Each structure stands twice: as structure tokens, then as C-alpha cells.
Amino acid sequence: MGRSYAKALDKVLVPRGFARSGDDWVRVRGDMWECLNRQSSWLGGVTVNLYMKDLVTESLFLEIFAPDGVACPRGVIHLQC
Image (cartoon, rainbow, N blue to C red):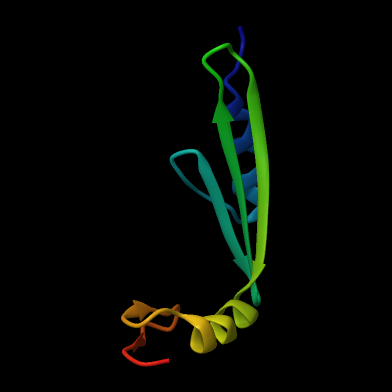
């Protein structure tokens, strides 16, 4: 019996601290945000993407460059940057 890619990813990622939301598996370790995203093709192919970002760097970037009225990660809304 075949298994789905999502179930196979669940089996590997959930014990390592990732939480699944649709086609995304996300975890935060310290200041690092990590996300694996699964994409399925209508032709039957599957692609898995890995994204990582430093949350402190993102927060500093948004404090400096966020457009007016954009909510920043700490829940602060910058009305003027």
C-alpha cells in the first residue's frame, strides 16, 4: 500500500518539533523560524521547499522599513517609520 508524501513528511517532521498547517510544517528554534512547504503538481510531481529566517533580523528590518500601518512581529503597529 502506498503512502502519501504528506504522511511521510508528518512521520519525519512532527517528532522533530514541526507543526503542520495545510501544506506547511513550521517550527521555531530559538530565533530561527523554519518552514517546509509541499507543493503538488497536477501532473503528479511533488516539490518540497525549505524556508528559514532569523526572527530578530526580521524584527529589526520591519522596525526600520515597514510601510506605515503594517503590523510587526511583536504585535506593534508602526504608524510612522
